[in-house]
Image 1 (spheres, helix red, strand yellow):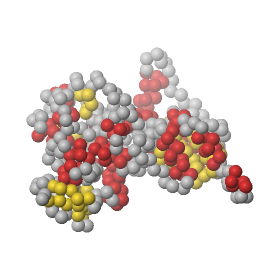
Image 2 (tube, chains in turn red, yellow; image 1 turned 90 degrees about the horizontal axis):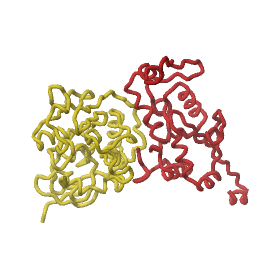
Image 3 (tube, chains in turn cyan, red; image 1 turned 90 degrees about the vertical axis):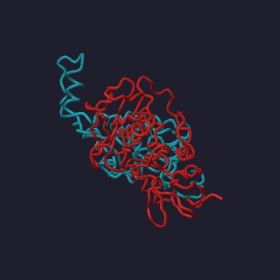
Image 4 (spheres, helix red, strand yellow; image 1 turned 135 degrees about the vertical axis):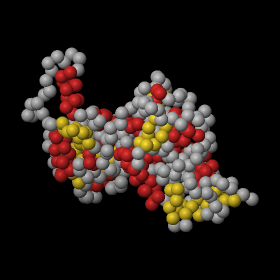
Length: 188
Length: 238
């Protein structure tokens, strides 16, 4: 940055948005695990919508990073907003890439699950299945992101390690396709 | 002087009757594979070991090595096709590595790492494949089956029990248990069977013992699958 200012070059920071759909925020936590390298990163990027900024709507961005898969209509809506606003879309973590843990429900019928969770389980006498119109409708199957929109890059892992995230982000910021070698590419 | 051929520019010695993959692995040259196993008759079905000889693609597990043969294996074109095969295996079954006991010891996963598979690319089938938990010692989780037929061959040719078979055709091909009830409990399969030991993925799992080796310290966590070429050429130590 300092060099850039001195030579009069204007460096626009790369605008990045992040969100968690049907995820557990574990990938965001792992992202924070890059620790003091966050300072280096913030020299290069600025954050738009993200759990870290609490901005609610995604604006025009260079990179959108999405954790979690699609389990309801709102997830799909947010994903499409991200796709529309972001030049590059990055799926991070198992859930975004193959549905992950939430997709373990895919072999069961949705009505059956709702019955079990809200009605018939032990201790739920007279429980009712929530149907407030404000609640997003669940999808019949949990889907990974790339089945609904084009995803440019993937960072696998549950969650990906801080090292893997750091390597992938550096590759993407340098304009390269992210490449994770042995030890960084992990699906578990 | 023994006979030899070249693979990716490296000269590899072979004995009469050896296949390309046998000689290559023994010579320390890794060729990706899933259904190949040194102790069993080749099946030639996973196609991961496909190599290029004289401008033609051939399965290196079913092709005998010949003197002076020029083999290409580790090329961008072949590895792209191998990665696609792996991606298809991942979407056809239910492969959720974070919740699988085999993670880190799984050949499918390790091969996907080796080939740099960042996502399974295709739409997931999410097939419904109920597990068979009937056996007291062995859990049978069909969700992860890649139809390599190693358990079929091991049970038939090594254990002498013929407990497994592949049934159906094409996309409907699936692993079954050779028992009237179709349940593993109604076979004479034991935990010590080669058929149980040989599964490259997480279909056959030992009950009552899990995560004895922590994730991160398992076979393919320590070294990539390509570093085990010579081990893959030799019979497994029990």
